[in-house]
Structures are given as C-alpha cells and as structure tokens.
Length: 404
Image 1 (cartoon, rainbow, N blue to C red):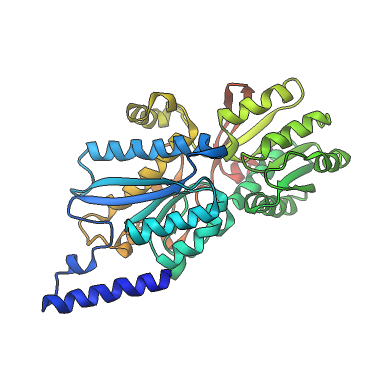
Image 2 (spheres, rainbow, N blue to C red):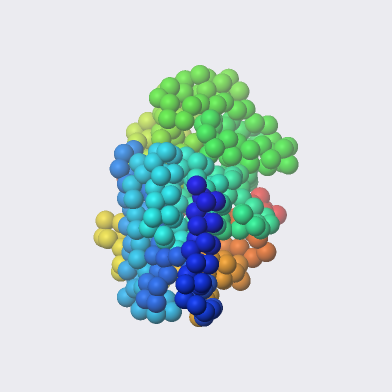
C-alpha cells in the first residue's frame, strides 16, 4: 500500500506537468504534501483514552501549547502550523490505521510525537517506507537507534533517550552513585524491557558487574516468581526495566517479599501517577529512583517560564506535557533552519541534520552525519511522596556518572 502510494504521488505529479503544457517552477514541483503558502500540516496518533491517557493527554497538550506559541509569533516563514491528533488507544492495529490515514488521506507534512512502544514498533517500517519526516518518538525502543542513518532510515529523528542507552546509564548509576556490585534486573518481555536489559548487559560486562535477571510479561499482575529470583540472588541494587503498565506491580512485588533494595527505573515512569501508586508500599523500606532527561535548573528557568505561559495550568510542571512541548520545539527548529528553501521532505531533513539542536530543558541532540541516538545525558529523581518525585542528581553522561 505504501509503495503504491509513493508511485501514485509520482504519477499525479507527472500527469499535472503534462496537463499544464509546460514546466512548473521548482517551488511548485517540489513542495511536499501538507504545505501551503500559509500552513504546515502535522499530526500524530497517541493514546488519549485508556490506561495510558495520563501520559498521552498531557503530551498532546504540550504539543498544542508549542503550536500555539509558534503561531502567535507569526508561524515559521509565513506559515502557521496546524496539528491533527487521533486517539489510537495504545493499540498497534489502530495505530497503523491512524498513521495510514494521516499520511495518505490527511496528507500531513510530518509526524510529530509518534507515541508509545507497541505502536511505534508496529509502524516504524511504515514510516520508513513512506519517507515522511518523523520527529520525536514518545518511546525509546532500540529500532530508533542509528549511528549512520541513510536511505530509508533517514527520516527517523528520535529525541528522547533510547532504551538501550538508558540501560547502560542505569547500570552506571547503580555502580557510580550506589556502589553496586551485583545488580538485579526485572524486565518485561516487550521491546522496552528487552532493550533496557540489552544495554544493562553491555555496561555490566564492561564494568565487570554481575547481573541477576528475571523476566515478566508486560502488564502482568503477578511478579512473585521474578521477585523470588531476585531475592535469592542477593543483589544489592535493582533495575526495574519496565514501563508504566508494569512497574508499579514490580515495585509492590518487591515490597511484599521484603526485597528492600533501592530500585531505578526508566524515565517514562517518572510521573506523579507512578509515585502515587508505589509510595505507600515502599515507604520506610527502600527508595525508587528514575532517570530523567529534562531539567528545570537556573539555565532552564526561562524555558520553563515560557512553557508555563502557554501550557494549561494543570500541566505547569507535568513532565509529559513538557516533553510534548519539546517535540514541537524540535519540529519547528527544523522548519526555521530550512529557511526559504523549497519545503520538501529532503530539504527539511537536511535542515535537521545541519547542526546539533538545543533542547530547551536539557542537552544538545545531534542528528548530523546520520546520528539517531536521541539524548545521551540524564539526571536522577526519587519518589519523595505520593505526590511526586524530587531531583537528586543533575544531567550527566555515563562518564560523568562514573567519575571518568
């Protein structure tokens, strides 16, 4: 279907040239779909109902806030941005259908904020075959990683940390910040869990650290056997390699069996809804830490103030809404860098690759020379109460965490 779609576009262009009886200007010939003289049409599909609505709803609100901010500044190169969104309920089948609709029927210029591990895993090849720029993924699955993206891989632009990299960072935290010698890893049998385990294994081998691992089904409500394995392994630190639907069960399972060792988990779990679910179980027993890749220190204060001017008040400090704002930022930075060049997919991708782009709440993201690594520096937070998390460590690279 997607290859036929590309061929159809080429055929329509050829027919239009013949029908007009002459050549069009380069701007007319090369302008990509979703672009008019005064508008750029973008879209995504994300879960705004069901179990992942507490993530998807603020994320979409953050993108909308950045679009509003950009349009109030006059848009980019005379064009305002229009953002379409559809709820795919975190369902890969619905996600594939939604993506097809956005690209083939709505004919958007770019996908911004492609959402959720199962949906992204099911549609990543679709995106590559379409060739449409896809900026920012609300997941960190390993399929996004590339150190030399060319050809069909080039249109993928991840910003968030990749889970493989994060697994390495979690081991570095366990060793550098907590002095761990033997680390337990409870991981889900999905892409997110296995990618984090892969990264953890790489870094543990490099550092000469022993891992004790146990797998659980994603979304399970029974982790007792896995917890027993970790307990018997007599580890001194634990990595919870699972996303939102499973990590509360893992943490509560550890508490129930009195495996009172500190836990670190992925950045996607660092949200009030997770703190609320686990705090009572862990209070007085052990701490739960989470990676992060955005910061609100003095140098990010101006960015936070700007964000809060446009964000809904209920999302003033919501991490998911802020990452939606960041997704909008990276898309718009590409438009700005493209300048007055013909708005084609190739020119837009050239613009994103022209130079590293600053995250207003974090470090640089570098897409130059085909790099598709997302962010590579992370901070650390801890569940402080049922209301939320507090920062404990600043943004750092693996070398900085390990004191190298």
